[in-house]
Figure (spheres, rainbow, N blue to C red):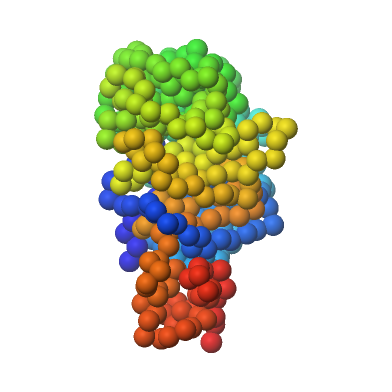
Length: 417
């Protein structure tokens, strides 16, 4: 039984990007497996119960075995998938260019589709849904926020203006960035949120619980992250903001040299966030003081993921006139020291997922599973970690069937006797 999961964008409903009971690779890493499709992966992978899920621009959602990389199933949604995913119980929730899809997480069968009732020319869903108590909360690129029944796929309510980023949820409060500001809403329908509408209206409802505006305009807004009594979010103006969850007032801000599209991660009193100025920053969560800044080889639009004293993040191209491969970095959370970097064959704004000792990242048409390399004195399967010494020099793992190369790496070829 796989108990270590990364089931949604930035790990949890608060979008903290921090898993406290798991670890990722720290030194001497290797490519455990890779998988490719005919489209490109622009969504971030998620992991649940031994399967890695990711969406592709070829219109499919894929499920891969987390140990071997074997493709378990694929589901054709009919439209390009650029949305981050959420797996709740036994269902995958993911958006495409038509709306929102619910897919059986074990079999890959489509359970239902939700087509937006508003502005069908601009209903593109890209942000990860949040699923709480039978309701799916999701925003579209036209800044509509929806609450959808997770069993029937019908809208319980929708509301114009408060959409775009993935929602972060803490208690009964929902926090969302529409590309201009952050809004705090009562997800149960208080503060004027219309619970049911049969016709679309672009009239704003009553004011939300609070709004924090003028953070700069962003077409790819940073998702808020919530920890205890503070919301952290990046702005199009290049600032990282800390906002009081009760009052909506600013506690502090930290200025970088370019737009922040990265969503913050929060771990052990530190906020980690990337900037388009090609740095990853570690900021004291209480004071807003910089602890360190790590220089990457391109824009850091990726959202960091933290586990066991390591922060993982990917880099994008430096600018549109260069051809720079992306990199996945592992950085010491305390010192900002680079532990290792891994070259991805394509610039990536995907965010890493950490599960059971591996880190997963997508770039271009490929998803990568990166793990610790086995000790040179050991002879183990890099996929299932079975001890192979007793079997001698084998081409395939007798336990899981993964091909074993000369250096111990897996190439995802599966022996099926």
